[in-house]
Image 1 (tube, rainbow, N blue to C red):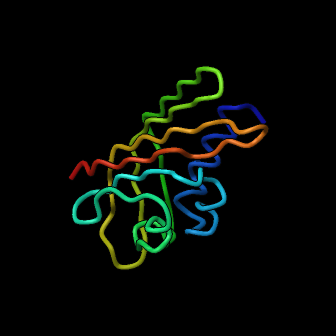
Image 2: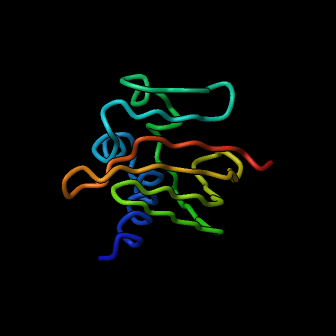
Image 3: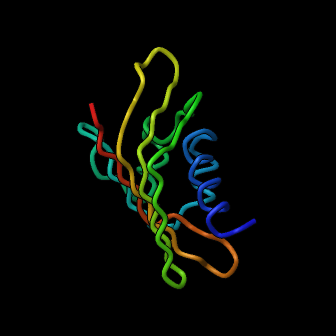
Length: 115
């Protein structure tokens, strides 16, 4: 699998496989920025937060951009996601990954709602 395919697959799993999967794919001191009221999360707080812990039923990523420089990769995209009774969630997102030996780990993730 190419670096591009690996990272986009990992990013989709971040949305659909829940907190345990996200924890295994993230750096120990990762920082996530969610819309208000959740805000900035890092450390153990990441895995207790509903915005991270809940799985999304479906996710569509578009306008995908990938920039790789050595062991650092940045993904930027527009997402449309659904779960439960919540209306369709649409946002612009970025995630930064660091390659640690043979595994890509998420360092940051940020979401800006578009509606």
